[in-house]
Length: 302
Image (cartoon, rainbow, N blue to C red; front, side):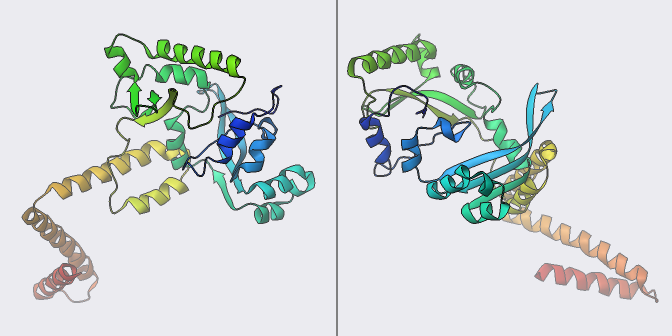
């Protein structure tokens, strides 16, 4: 949503009432701006949390834009944010920052951030991305696609559905824009969030880039948060490979699993047995046999 403070009109009471009561309607409203002063003061007063993000960026020749390399994000409640943001001396005090903010995310851009940036192009214009998304055709690709939502009849119409009936998504979007402009000039107000008029909304669709979780996922997830974004390609391949191996393991029958488990334990027992046997001062085949057998029983019961 957008309610800039630089507009000549004040926030209409209908819009303010819709935003103020969004919690009772089980709705979440997200407003984003480059500067806090760009957001209408009425929005500041009724919001639940404020996420203030900044960081350090360097020029990237491949992006032909600045690339974020260090993040510095803080979560505030509105009252604490006003105290921190309006006081220049307080903003320079790191101790007061950690006291006033609820949570902090600081550090280099990691592999998890790299995956997040690939979901949506943060360097592109919103209008251009919406136009590109309207041509979304390959459902196997994971991303955001525009849908026309008709709340009165509970219908969701995708761009693919419109192509089948001989219309383009851009044509329908232009019709909706014309309709809302006419309504705005006739009534001089913004309709409440619970009206029955159709609107356009983004929806994630397509196959997720990861097949699913596995027992090692929580450990690999720590690496996603620890390693820098440059390691993203390798982390993704490793994570996908682990996921595929566990999917293959789940597809095996119980007898095949037991056979693979027994073979693995036998190999590990032989490797450990020969390693320990090489350090013993006395060499005898019977000792090696007992050592390997004992390790096999120990690993089997583990």
